[in-house]
Amino acid sequence: MGGISIWQLLIIALIIVLLFGTKKLRSLGGDLGSAVKGFKKAIGDEELTVKKDNTEADADFEQKTLSKEEQQSEDPVQKSQKDKEQV
Image 1 (cartoon, rainbow, N blue to C red):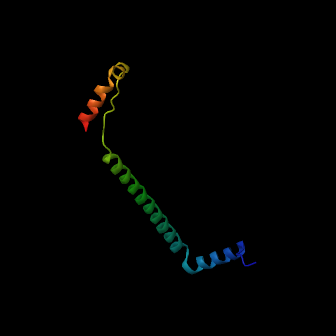
Image 2: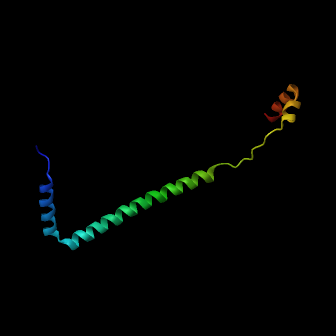
Image 3: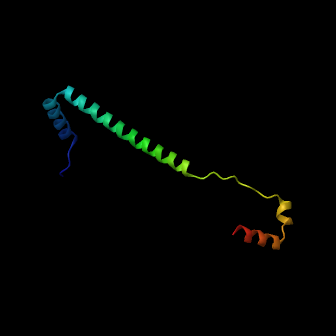
């Protein structure tokens, strides 16, 4: 029905081996493999540099917490005055 069977693929592979020879096909396969490895390495290196850039750009802040006593002792008036001073 128009599909390629396993026998047709084997005949095509045999013709390719006869035309190019095993040495040429082996070197072609090696070149193709090294190209794929180089491409994957380049993609991985690019992702690492992007991650480094993102972490270096982040600001470093210290997190401060108020104790329960400090939170309860603040008057609403004092709090509003502090807010006005910060603006």
